[in-house]
Length: 432
Ligand SMILES: [Zn+2]
Image 1 (cartoon, rainbow, N blue to C red):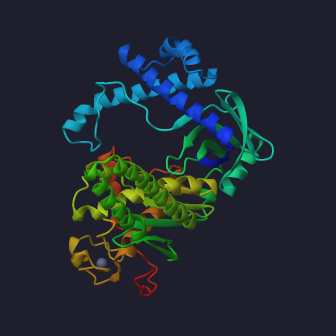
Image 2 (cartoon, rainbow, N blue to C red):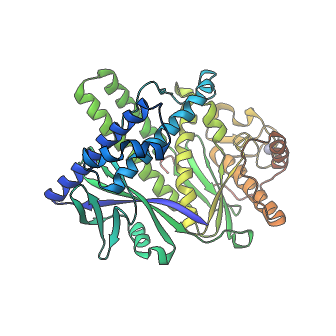
Image 3 (cartoon, rainbow, N blue to C red):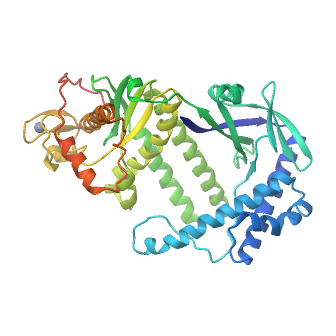
């Protein structure tokens, strides 16, 4: 099995080498925008080869780009146009309200504003001994030392003989700190995950207040959900204030804040994911694809939905981190997980009356921490899926939502699941 992740390397620059990177990034950006205009004028061309033929001499001469970078430019612009064409085709869906994404149209050439340049491995960037990397600039190759997460550095060190393949890298300049980073895509060979290698099961669910992870043996982890979403809302408030202000300074501040928020969220999610994954564990997550489609995020009542978004991000981190340690994540149907009773299977909105911290089944009277209830249901579904996997050799609970009949059958079986380890739930402090 293969897993792809991105290593973020901070480059150590001198005033001189910083300038050559800056020149390269700027030339690359200008070349992108030039190529974008050419593509637009030539029937909004998305064919990378044709585009390459049209712009290559100009990119080499006028923008002084090294040959490989010039190739990357037409590749990137071609891919962008291709993506836009796809969206043109989907625009009718947007009108009908199927998708929430704002569509900007293809009525003018797209403008590239990000300070990123794409480098090809072994052509315009290569790793050298002693934690150094050589990067092609307009003035030729320049060698930098770098720093990054120890785990990522280890993977780069291992290289192809250790089952690690380097892919394209993006040179990115943090607009706030003005520092250069090289974002290297790494493809890592990870151990195969089979029914026989499963050491345990976990289920994860984001409830009203907590992200809860539990095992069938009731080993439970609580993470404050507020850390993921509420602080994000504070960011959001300040940002919308800055947006209405609309001055130059406020726009800059808005951008800084957006980046900081992204870093903050990623940091929280990385730490949580790290605490959850275990070697050999199959981790069940609520399948959120359907929620994402029909979400319109306005007003207070959508707070939970917004929290679910944060959870989808976390899911992506969990997925690759699990694979790296020889585990696996899978999606299970999210239907009724929070209002179904893990004790008797009774499903009702009234089980969660008052939306309080307690789940109380109106049928059997079973009570427990509300956020734990949903997690137990997710865990049970994961467990059942694993058993099916043992029997059939197919891991099929990854609900793709396409086959509604199969899904109805699955849900029916899920409703028969019962939580049999009735261990006592310890009371929780608010701050945990
Ligand atoms: Zn019940």
